[in-house]
Length: 306
Ligand code: NAP
Ligand code: GLV
Image 1 (cartoon, protein in one colour):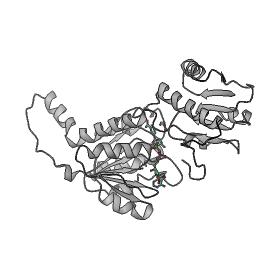
Image 2: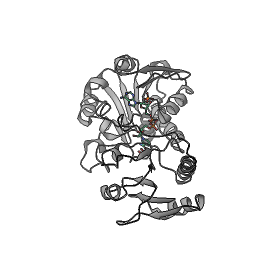
Image 3: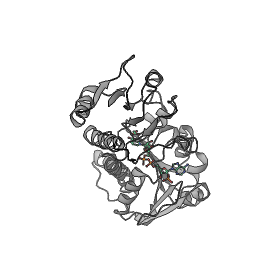
Image 4: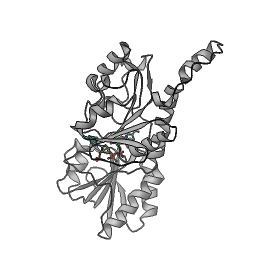
């Protein structure tokens, strides 16, 4: 069995060593133009040339959860795509979103600014009931985030394509329940995959439907958000703020208005990092399962786009 590794922006050596150690029977190689045909590939943002040349691949494993970038490329028709499922990302996402929600709810920015001015002032306590959180996308990451937030006593809503049952979470499904979901939500978290159906879903219309003083947390993909609509709603006071981890162009261009907007918090796409040990273990386990002729979870439905 031959495995080709082609992950742009990822130092390959530690990955190659880990894959070789876990699969001593396999030939694991760093791809370069003209490399021999492989059975499996481990990729992130591969060049089109890789896919054009590696025409006999059976399965491509990505070292990320989202496959929007990969699906923009021309893939060999027969190849199956398998994405990472959790692999240590769900707890990171729960940490990140909890931090953003609590920072806003407990007004930590205001307390920080007061402290810098030597001001001792206890602000009025807020009620969880007034800050219902809504999670768009109840998959591997969204479900974990929604469940975590219930532990802080926030009312939690969730929205997905197909109906879900999650303890403590009011679940909505499909486009026809989106407005109901938004109208019941004040802090909106986006954990959807980027597809034709979800592109631009955080826009003037949807964000205006949130409870007054809405707050937006986008940890999915930059293209879910219409940047200028967010800024307009923040500037007229319809929205209270936003925490953004992902952007239409990454790195976020130096002259982008988000950098300096007083109501926007920014991080450089770090809410849930790919962890090598966990990812290699998951991919190796799946390769061994496929080699036995059995099926694995995490296959991407190319028609649905995730
Ligand atoms: P997932 O398990 O595939 O979950 C996707 C969820 O979105 C599912 O609940 C799905 O509904 C729902 N969904 C998809 N299309 C929809 C639509 N048109 N309408 C309503 N709901 C829809 O994905 P995941 O592992 O949780 O990851 C989610 C996304 O997070 C990734 O695609 C990636 O873009 C992003 N991400 C970001 C970072 C970061 O560091 N910022 C890290 C990892 C991942 P069903 O359950 O009904 O199918
Ligand atoms: C990161 O954004 C991922 O999709 O894993």
